[in-house]
Amino acid sequence: MIMQWTDVLGAEGVSTKDIENMGNEIENARMGFMEKIKNGEIGFTNLLNVDLGNYDEIKKYMEEFDYILIIGMGGSILGTEAIHEGINGLYYNEHGFPKVYFLDNSDPEKTCRVLNLIDLEKTLIFVVSKSGNTLETLANFSIIKNILEKKVKNYEKNIIAITNGGYLKKLAEKGGYILFNIPENVSGRYSVFSDVGLAPLSCLGINIKELISGAKIMDKLCKKEDVFENPALMSATIHYLMYKKRKNISVIMPYAERLYKFGMWYRQLWAESLGKDGIGQTPLVSLGAKDQHSLLQLYMDGPKDKIVTFIRVNTFSEDIKTEYGEGNLNMHNLSEIINSEQLATEMSLTNHKVPNVKIILEELNETTLGMLLYMYEMQTAFSGELFGVNSFDQPAVEEEKKLTWRLLEEGNYGNKRISK
Ligand SMILES: O=P(O)(O)OC[C@H]1O[C@H](O)[C@H](O)[C@@H](O)[C@@H]1O
Image (tube, rainbow, N blue to C red):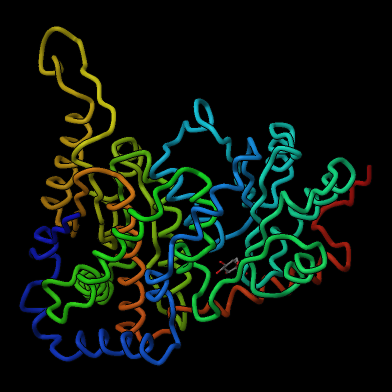
């Protein structure tokens, strides 16, 4: 994985001098975060030292099942989805085993549809919630549990609960489900390298060891003191300086469909971690090359309020040639087309003075994905220090949660109650 920031160091961007002028501010941010790790306040970096042998055992559970169902919200599921899609691809269910479904919303059609598609008796269910009290997770799980109770003998063996407390932990203890914990000092959106991500991913055929080895390579780089050698610190600094120059939007633009869910994971990380005390840079995800045909006009010619991060994959696992037989389209691989489009967009944005940085993955595999996700966790943590916000909590979200519970208690659904 290589990170290039040459295009941001131009006229509308930040100069090497700007970065050098920050002097101690950058080092203080790095040290500030390192101190939090040292005193145990923050624990996500320690996850990389965990013994991975246990996941071979967890993988064996799958021998009895044909389907996997993962229930969770936000940090309890987005990382798993990102890595599953990043490695297994979008169309995994069509030709792969096991079949996996994610229940990550309170949308009734989605839940009903998934229930129609799976045989719960043959399904291994991961229910994941750090707090154990998240409404959507509990609602979906209660539906599943109810059906299982009626239909499946000894259904408890189908369930793995990953939680630290709340109602879900009580249920798990009472029901005798397999139960895993999340270290208390690892907040949800930084938990993908804990059991939250690794337990289900090991059942989905992901090579956990390579994933963690990628994260470890990145961890080493992110400990470097020199900002120009530390990709997470450099990227955090660039985004911070750009924010000061009114780049209020951070667009992430992968040119690989398999990275779309990575973008969804990144959105939560960047938004919930930094969006507080009136500060925050809005994360946007655009998918290359298709979003060139819907969003690029705005990025090029609209308000100059964005910094764009491209992610390109040099070598795709499958490729195919065009066969026009004449003209410029003749005999180009699709990989050549998509990567030329990435370069052309980058050059055009630079011409239009839109600052952009680029992450290049030689291939998209467990090692590079591990590097990428870990880099963003570190970048976000360093950014929290630079912005002076706590990047590990999300106090404002609680207000909506409390209000929803209250409305439910009152039977106030915002429309006429429909009873069946
Ligand atoms: O893991 P849980 O406790 O169920 O939380 C799931 C999600 O819930 C909330 O909406 C928080 O804002 C997220 O940060 C969290 O990841």
